[in-house]
Each structure stands twice: as C-alpha cells, then as structure tokens.
Image 1: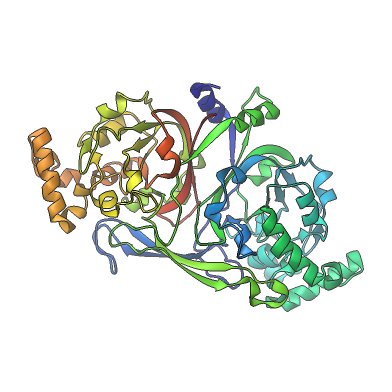
Image 2: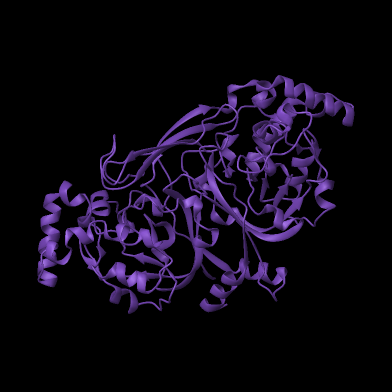
Length: 556
C-alpha cells in the first residue's frame, strides 16, 4: 500500500469517539480524588506562577474519566502503562450492546455477548451495558422509586452497574482477548470491589437480587480467595487489559465490529492512565474484513515521550508528582488495588497546547471537535540544517516535503535526542537552545491552513521569543549574535517584541491553529514524507492543554 493509499484509507474511514467528557464535575471512583484545576499563571500574571500564559496546575486520580487499567493496578510486579506496547492497545474488535439484558446489580455472561455478535480469539471487546447514560453530562434517568424521582447518577454509574458473571473472565482468558472495555465505572462488578464495603446497604440489595436470580449468596457465587487469585494474579499476568468509563458514540456501534484504538498516556510510574478511545470502520465501498487486513499492515510510529516524574517541566511550571493512596494488600481478600493521585502542570512531556492556553475566548481541548485531532499531514526532518538557537523557515519545510493545504505539520529538528530519556540528554540545550521559526512562519501556517503543528523540542516558539530571553541573558546574547551573522539584523529588528513575543501562540491560537510540543519516541526513525497523523487527547472540558498519545501511520 502506497503512502497515498494509507492516507486515503484512514481519511475515508469512519471514526467514532468512545470517550466520555472529563470535567471537574466528573465523579471520581468512590473515595478517590476528583479532577481539580487551578490557574497558577495567566497572560498578565497570576498568584503562584506569574505572567506569560494561561497555565494550569491540576490534581487528579487516573481512574476518573475514560482510562486504561494496566496490569500493575492489581499486581505490583506487572507492567506499568508506559511498558505496554502500542500494538497491545489497538486492533480488531467488537462493540456488543447488552443494555436490553442488564439492570442494577445484575450479571452478564459470555453467552449474552456471543449471542449478539461474533467474538473472535484475540479481539478487543467493548461492552455497552447502557450505564453510560448515568455519566454526569447526560440527561437525568427517571426512576420513580428513587429520591426525587430520578436515578442518582453517581450511584447508578459506580455502585449499581452490572458486572461479569463468575465464568466471564476465564472465558475472556480462554478467548485470549486483548482488552475489555466497559461504559460504566468498572470492568468488575462493583460488589467485587471496595464498593461492597463502602456501601453496605447497596451490597444488601445486590445480594438479595443475586439470591433471587441464582439462589446463592455473593461469597458462594464469588468465593473471595478464588476471585482474588483470578483478578489480582491470573489476569494481570496474562497481560489482558481493561478500559473503563467509555462513552461518547458507543451507541452508534451496537453489535458491530470495528478497529479499536486506546490512546493511553504512556505513564511510567502508575497503574492506570487517561485515554482517548476511538473506533474505526471501513470507508464506504470497502468491507470491514478488507479494512482490518489493511490496518494490520499499517506501521504505527509512536511520537510520544514517556510520562514520568523524571520529565522536566517548562521553566517555572510544577513538575509531576505521584502519591500512591491505595495498595493491593490494603484491604480484605485483596480487593484493594494500586492507585495514585497525581499533581502536575501540563507543559511537560508530550502534550497539546489548546487555544485557551493563550486565548481567553478560545476553546478548551475538550471542546475541540473529535476530527480536529487526526488527518493527513507531513513529518519534515530539518535536523541537518538547524543548530543551537538557529531559525528555520517555511522554505526549509517546502523543499523537503509535499505539504498541502489543511495538513498537520510535524517538524523534526533533531532536538528530541537531547530529551530527558535519551542517552545524549542535554536538558539545557533541549529547553533553552532549541531552534525556532522565522518571523514569517506563523503567517505561512495561516496561508497553508495548517490544521495543527507539532515539534520535537520543548516549544514551538523560538526560546528567545519567550521569557527565556530574560532568564538566560548569556544564551540570548549568543542567539542575537548568531542572528546578526546570518541575517544582518539583531533580534529586535527581526522580531519586534510587540509582534513576535510568543509568536506561535499569540498570533495563531486565536485563529484555531494550535500545536503539540515535546514529541519524541519513534520520531527518531521518521523520515521526510506524508503520513496520517492522529493525536489521542483526553477530552478535558476545562483543560487549556493536555497530554496525549501521538501516532503517525504509514504502510509497513
């Protein structure tokens, strides 16, 4: 398959967003930390961080919103999220709608899945229980027996949703399922989690229903030690993954096969991570079988740096910190799990700057349409023509790649090799001395209708058009002299401050052209050319920027 055919295949495929909105109003897993958002920095200045940008500091639990649960959640010796290959997060699968067959506290069985759709060995299985109807941003669900006449959203979503029957997970292991995703609070039955103890009255209701339907108590049907061994040892060691709190367009794919992609943030130290989940179906006129065969032939270049407490942050931003608040051994029968609360500012690791990062009237990343994040584009390697503090131009882009109107543009300066996780790491060079765009670059981006940009260093800006100019006068003097030698102009002649301070943010974000920073990973092996590029950005409704998983597709 040619470069053009790959781009046409993915451009014309039908894309579905299976991600629920993430908000300060999204309820966390019971007992864990909800999303908290604090502006520590504003364009004109703010307490705690100063001026220059709209910068956010957030605190969160990874089990809030759509997320991937890795093996380390239940088995401390298993893989962290960053250890999971991208290929394990993508593949052929099926979305099965059992919403007509389940109710509060009930159990679903393998037969309920297989009687509605074909499940193949090695599939990704997405289960639509119908309980995404209880997410915080959905209409109220009438319930005449409930207080106020409506279902309590948090109880419906986290405490009363259905869960797998005793034989379900063994069936999933026998089928070698790659991943199981659900549209409710947990891939386990809530009464096989700590919720059983947090909400004893709810457990009494669940057990009463179980006695009616199965004639057994909960511990008779789910012997605690056996269940612990299965869920906390056997399943994690098998590598089978879980995705929870799915939603979005899941109802559009009832009992249909699709190519599933779980774009989880590659978090190094933790057991779970936010994810943007997408499902693809064949373009019109192409069978799904042919589409899946073509997708298996695609190489996925992962352009994402590992997300870690070791990742350096943009100067004067707060680094990532991780605090484990739960451990597997902390509760009866091992029903606990490893779970961390996290705190960080966004401008570290691979992330997308959203409009609101510099444009107060702009959209948050969660308000951007899903189709913003993927499309045809180019990766251009200019690493042989740039050096410390140098300037790159539109001409350097156009002479190396066939860039077209509306493309996504990824620029490879080569400075990824100075990132924190590289054998050639040089953080000062990566953060302060990377090259940046010429004065005409932003206008050229608008003329080309660039969809969004990406860069393999800490900022799309030239560092000397940021506050770094003031903080590092020696580096500025070196950059200024280099500009004079190359162009015969000093910095303020070539980049008048009132027009070019934070040029790529202030002159583009209000026009909808945003950018990703700190790309890395497989960008080292990416050559000049056209690709299909996708950014899996968490759907954060209040977030000015956010981390994500960035992938470039090309035929193998």
